Length: 375
View 1 (cartoon, helix red, strand yellow):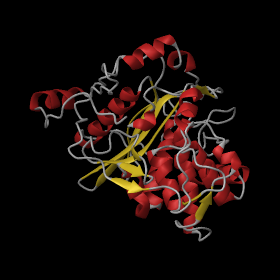
View 2: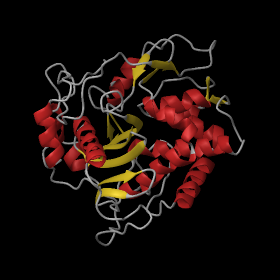
View 3: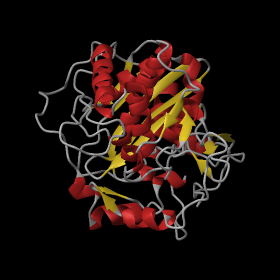
View 4: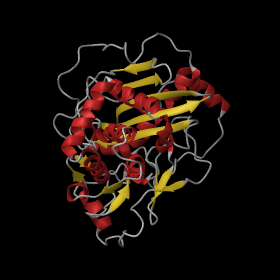
């Protein structure tokens, strides 16, 4: 189902916007657990705001940003091209949702695969990309960690290309900001991938998960993620008057909360006067780092968490955001093709919707209803 922001679009209510611009208070309710965040100016690397930016956190599907970076690097080196066929293996197609439900042996181009990773966050396609680029998933993950180390992501470690939970996979808000800035800096020619409003397989239209695209002024990326242990995460970018900002928000309690916090942070960065001279390179932890990765499953995947999420949806399931900086989209989404190489797509299996519905809780990853991939 296509999800619409609950509040009707009203072009910048002057009083509400002015009050919000002065206070910059987050619209969402206070949470009992930590919610790390960081806001960075891409051109200068200057840190504009941060909280618990070195706190170890599960990346969830934000992992796919490093998968994409590693794939872009392979294109840059000439190892593959955007038109290289990506073959779906049995291992890839066995991944839990979110997924495309492609069959073993079916092929799509790397170009389509990247679009699917960003818009749909498909776990099956992430594994297929890893195998195509690295030869094996394990070799690709080794390359991911090498890339992370070269970028200076010193508090991150990855064990798979899709972000499904597992022991030894973690990151921080600071490290994710380093990655987001690197994607914009090292591969500016591919920035358009992250601002896609939606994709079409030729049979199905899939709107972008990132609700800021088309609804927050200047929004142009990047990625969302969710598992029980991490809560709702989001890396966002926006550009106004030639200036690009990146925000990282981790551990919010709902789809709406991560959008609200991201929008409020970005707006703050665009209209406030920066203070301090810390950069991503010079930023130091506020306190000694913790040995264990934060796990907020008890807050997120519980009756309490379900109640919080239900309160951010209206009676027909539409998401209710509170930030005054998020407005209704003023046009229908533009869907670009991202699907199988033409001529090989079979009829949709009768049991695909049932399989997705029965996935329920896979590897401690509950499937929200409606699923995040549906908006």
